[in-house]
Image 1: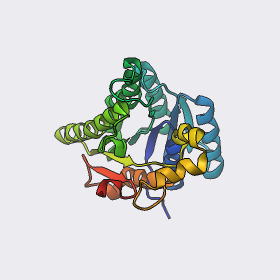
Image 2: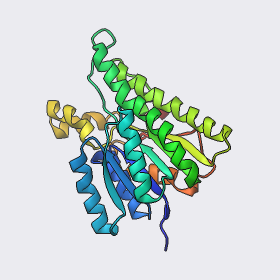
Image 3: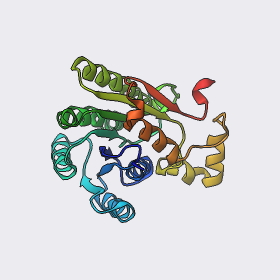
Length: 259
């Protein structure tokens, strides 16, 4: 039986590890071709080889991409489009948490770096992918925001601001595509604490068990999330099952936003 995204051709950023790797696996398992883009090209190549071994040659390919670099975006998208015979889905997953520190403590360079990686990447990805996606409709843009883009903290100004920007930029892209009469949707996903390397700094400070226990106590469901939880949401948004969903957000947050 054909998979849920059979025939889709997805470009996934930050795909070498964490959420990006889980999303790439989920899409490949359900029939999509996947372009794995990451500044960590070696890691992306390794994952592409593993996916190809599991799902057949030419299912996945790796591309080096610094998501803040417009020229690299152009080259990677052009190469992926040629290799896959089109691009019908863009998953803007690459991001960084940035240094902690309140509005008086955070350095401007740090703030700008977080905004560049987390927001410029979504702008550049959509800007340059749409010309390929126009030729491969129906299409879907999935932007990984965060529950931190909807609920603020006192000591993460850059992360809060950047993920809130991703949230509204996703809606802007959705309305643009609708205005252009394109069958291309744009939605955002808002995870809470997920078991990925982004939690490693906290684990180093408190130890793995204590760090995860501290985070779990903040979640009504009593645990941190798994990468597969976010991959399932991305799979739904890439698939035609979500064909009437655009400009929306999916909160995968264990209930935090309900409090």
